Image 1: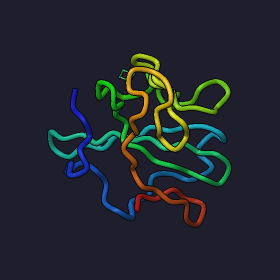
Image 2 (image 1 turned 30 degrees about the vertical axis):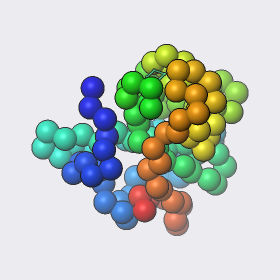
Image 3 (image 1 turned 90 degrees about the horizontal axis):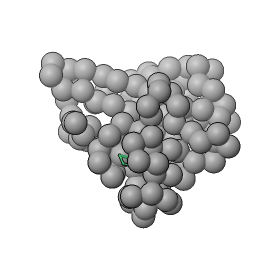
Image 4 (image 1 turned 45 degrees about the horizontal axis):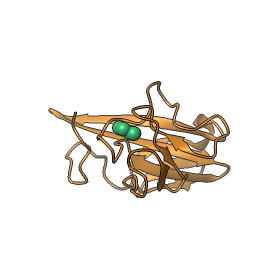
Length: 121
Ligand code: FES
């Protein structure tokens, strides 16, 4: 499986519009995939109210994408991000609190909400 490195040519540049804020469930998540030639960048965003955080979609345990089903990143109570691979639980800031990579962090993918849309920064 390919990790999504920060220097990945498929990673969208700062200022790329990802979606409208209203396209995200509240609370909820959404996955994004970008391709450039043979390279792929996988990221996801998590919305809580007016706040949106982005992460590279690669679990620090084994590098797998976190969601088995599209956009299903949060636990039922929406308090944690779940990796479907082996059950790691992350706080919404990306810090792993349980599972095989406890103490590690998801790689941030900086995003911001501006004028009702979600953008890379
Ligand atoms: S790949 Fe995420 S817990 Fe193993």
